[in-house]
Image 1 (cartoon, rainbow, N blue to C red):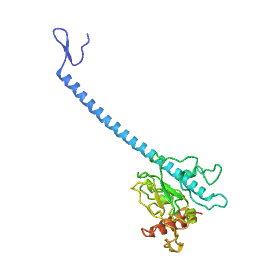
Image 2 (image 1 turned 135 degrees about the vertical axis):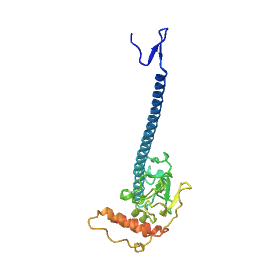
Image 3 (image 1 turned 30 degrees about the vertical axis):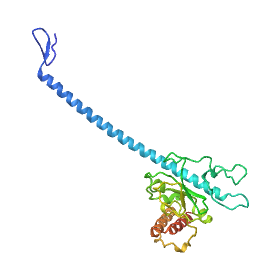
Image 4 (image 1 turned 45 degrees about the vertical axis):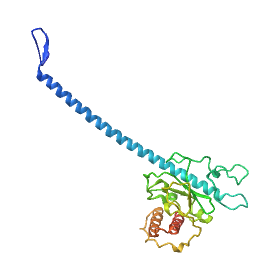
Length: 267
C-alpha cells in the first residue's frame, strides 16, 4: 500500500500530516496571495493607462470634429455674405438659423443643412461673434476645456496656435471678407478679436466693436528673411509669428494687419 509523503498512520490506520508539512503549505498559500495582489495591481495600472490613452484619442477626435464644424460655419457665413439678392447690399446673417434658409430669397437657399452641435459640449449652442450691425461674423465653442492640439494647424486656422482653452478657438469669416464688411477682426486670434461677443459664459473675455481699419504701414517690420529653400508656407508662418510678437498687447489692429498679410502671403 502506498504511503502519502509527509504523513504517517496512527494505530487506527488513519494517516496524519507532519506539522512541518502543514507549515510549508501555509507558507505557499501566503506567497500565492501576494502574487495575486501584485497581479491585480499590474492589471489596474494597465487599465488606467488604457483609459487615459482612450480618453486622449477621443479628445483628439472631438478636436478634429470641432475644426471641421468651425470651418463649415465659416464657409457658410462667407457664402451668405457673398450672395445677396440682386440689388441688395452684402451683409452677414442676423441669426445662425439664417444659414439654413436665406430669407432674402423667395425660394429655398441654404448654406448649411443643419446647425451642428458643439462636439465639446454636445449642445447646439455656440458663442457668437457679431459686427457693428449685429451680423454674425463668426462663432466659437462654449467649452472651457484645455485642448491637446496647440500647433500644426491648417493655414485658415493659424490663429489657433498656442490657445489654451476651446473658447479661444474662434472661427471667423476670412480677413478679406471681414475687411470688406467694415468690421475689423483678427481671424481666430482669441482675446484680440475686435468684434462684439454674445451668448458667452463669464469665463470668456469680452471683446469690443471696432470699425476703423488701420493702414498696413502701421505694422511693425518683421525679422530678416528665412534661409533659402524654406517652404513658402513656413516662410509665411514665420513672418506672421514675428509680426504678431512685435504688436503691443492691446493692439488688435496690429494683429489684424499681420493676419491679413499672412493671408496674402499664402496666395
